[in-house]
Image (tube, rainbow, N blue to C red; front, side, top):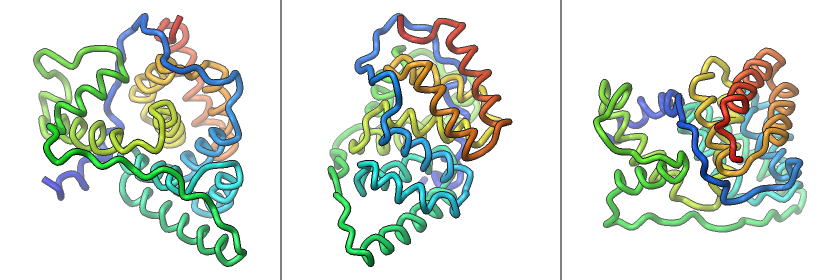
Length: 247
């Protein structure tokens, strides 16, 4: 099963193609503009997802200078493995190692930050992941499986147990920050508009605003390209028009 995870996990970007409209209010609302820290999260996520290691190196430097801790950036790169695959994630981690060595050579000591949370060895990971997913989407995960879950049950298990239990349960980053990483990566990859729609809906449900997500896409445009950013803007416009954002 462990080997299967390495092969199938990148497919999890095909998840959440249709989050239902919800009247739930966001648990947290950030300021009107993205902070320097959150802009750096978008910067690093978009470049890592596309594998642009040349630009990623200074972006990681800038992220540390903006206040991201070592463990927050490590966690960002762990999270990305579920959306752009292990190869891109591992390359990003190797770039981070190079940045860390450069900074240490200059006498810079960066804050390590909070440690990841260890999951209980007795926890039912499938149920834990299911509850985390319900918290994100605001809808119950019940009834007969359909779509990808019915066609390939193994992917449903991997999503619940690995992504939404193992990864989302690690802490260090908030769920809002994890969704910012996700939408930055999906927008940068391109061709996954259906899944991007679901995650933009979750992002707005949790508290990101249309303006903040627009700022995220401006960074994607600068890093990746106008075509990818405009495709994502079209999806964002549709999410806002459909009323899936919080009231």
